[in-house]
Amino acid sequence: MRNEIIQLKDLGRMPNESINDTEDIIEVIRSYDELLEQIQFPISLDEAQALVQIFPESSFYDLQWSLLKLVESVIRIVDGDTYLHLINSCPSQEWRDVLNARYKNYKKEQEVSK
Image (cartoon, rainbow, N blue to C red; front, top):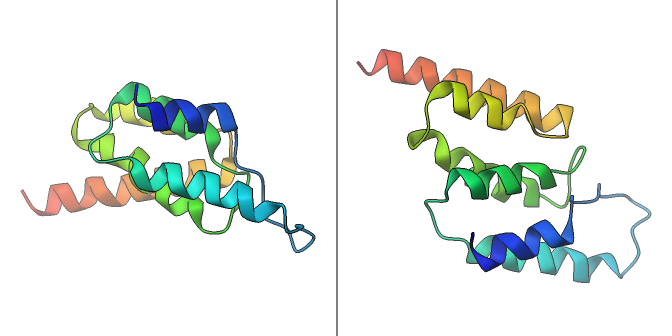
């Protein structure tokens, strides 16, 4: 597993952003952002399993979208059941729903392009 993913795992689950966030949050944002930006595609299933666990409950300064793109990148290397199991292990109901909806759309696109 890449060092950046281990570091993200050590940072833990992204907190939810809040209008009450103090200036200290800037350093937390920077830590997640810098690590996410360093990760090159593709990632492995093990790495995706670690990353899916750090989704915030709702949002964290748009960094959840970078996280989503990384998790979705494994769609091409695993079978559908494995991918569904992966995304259904996400601790955030909101992001689990988003990932499931996007996967359904992906499957529809695949069927149309056949």
